Amino acid sequence: MTRTIRLVFVGLMSLTLISCESMPLSKELMGTGAGAAVGGVIGGLAGDGNVLAIGAGVLVGGFIGNRVGKYLDDRDKELLAQSTSEALSTGSNQSFDNSETGVSGEVIVESSEARSDSGEIPVIKDRVESVPPLELVGEPYRAKKKINVRGGPGTDYAVVGSLPSGDPVHVVGRVKDQRNWFMISEGGAGSGFVYGQLLKRDLDAAEEVAEQPKPKRADVAKQSYDYSTQCRTVIQKVKKSDGEVVQEKIKACRGEQGWEAV
Image (cartoon, rainbow, N blue to C red):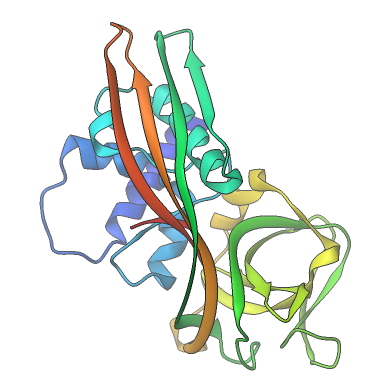
């Protein structure tokens, strides 16, 4: 399966996981889903049904606004999705130019704000003792070497698993009072804690993370926790091949599984 076809396929899968009212999908909405590849799939297990989780990796991009998406072909959408993902993750403006179609665009970061809240997160019951306050990350990483996975953020917690060297893993967030410790997840459920110095951020690992099997629902329970996150408002501005400029404003917050449109 080619990269572009796979991107669209997984993105469309994410739409089926949004438990909103049943309604026909417009062409514009289908275009939005095509940019929301990995996060939407993972978010189907962890999300509350009111947000569309967005994969953080460059390969799977961010998301496409409904109004601008209808003017773009698959490659344009991929480029805009990549730019949006980078703008959200870095807080810096991004741009793209597709010489094949004559379409160009930019994603402008209009504002950023910090937010704190509390909620529930799914965890694998026999692996996570409790969930401490987190700073949400929602991005893929890769193990630098073999790492022990523990039931809590510290070496005094039991070892509940391990990550082989080079393995991809999704980081849910940093532990607030012990920032060197990260909570990780498997298939959308928290699976333990690892020492963050032994991981490296790798956005290209997002697709591998999305393909990891989900735990059995009987093994998963929800735990309450406090968290802090970052929200950004970005403007997607696209110049069509005929010179017309279309734009759309989107707000997103960093969630457990990636950026979520709100």
